[in-house]
Image 1 (cartoon, rainbow, N blue to C red):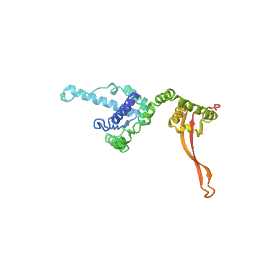
Image 2: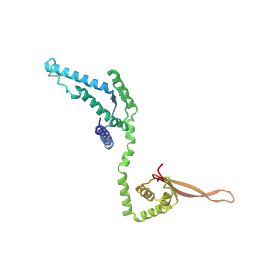
Image 3: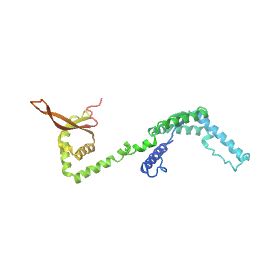
Image 4: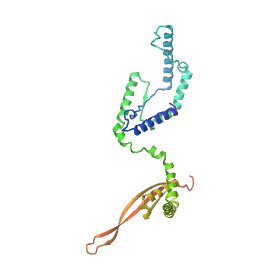
Length: 277
């Protein structure tokens, strides 16, 4: 119920998925897809304290009966008598700890779908509610074969995990092994990007359109994205092909067009505030 326990459950689930993906098609039997079923039983403070004390009374009565010889000790053993099951203040404190970590427990919803179940009801009703909850979770879970098919596409978290490290490695590689091309790209950014970004510093977004043929090289396009990103901006790019009329046949009036390639960059950033209101 603590943050450590919640993180442990998440990491366990992620590791099992990782192993399933790694051994897929090699050892599917021993590395099956994990299926976690989660539900949280909830009662109010008074009910919680009453139940803890009732559990203490039943445990003590059972252990006393076992010690007296009324129960065959070969097949039965003493049950643990917890301090919180006999002291109302300790029982209350235990519930307060649960309340303190309740938000941490609910954070599990970021990783697993589950509902809160009112455990103040009769045992049979609570059991039925748990059964319905698990059936619902099963119905909303993607099939194993389907998941195996899409697992080749990385999760967002996997893509982001080493993004900064990979970015730095690419930039250093440009400087070391593609210096001439890298210099041209930096000149392009300085010439066509910087002024527009400075012009829109209060707006938070600059749209730059360029027809520079250097961007036909995919490596150059990647360099632009990497440099702008490393400078702290968010960037996206769209390549547009425009057909521009060039001439008209005087006899047939057919219009002949030339193809023009335009790259449109959207550079986004946190706008500068002129004053605080």
